[in-house]
Length: 59
Image 1 (tube, rainbow, N blue to C red):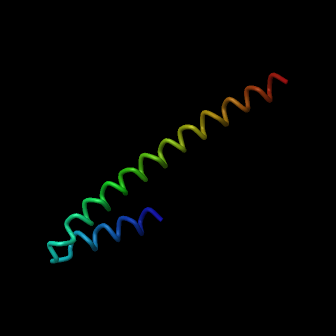
Image 2: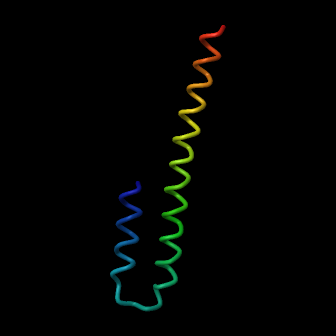
Image 3: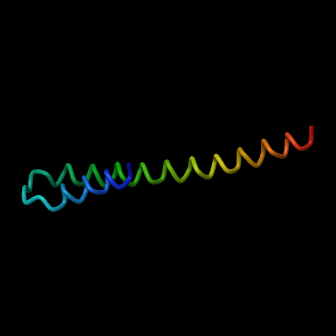
């Protein structure tokens, strides 16, 4: 999915239409937000799995 988003961003950036500049900026912002969200979910998921393992082992 991330490669599809990056391909879309690349296609928008290489277009010669100047009216698409705003769209390209929104696409870049959306891509950055998606990357940060995925990284945060990965970090939270690892911490949650560790916490649940500790609770399971203590029981």
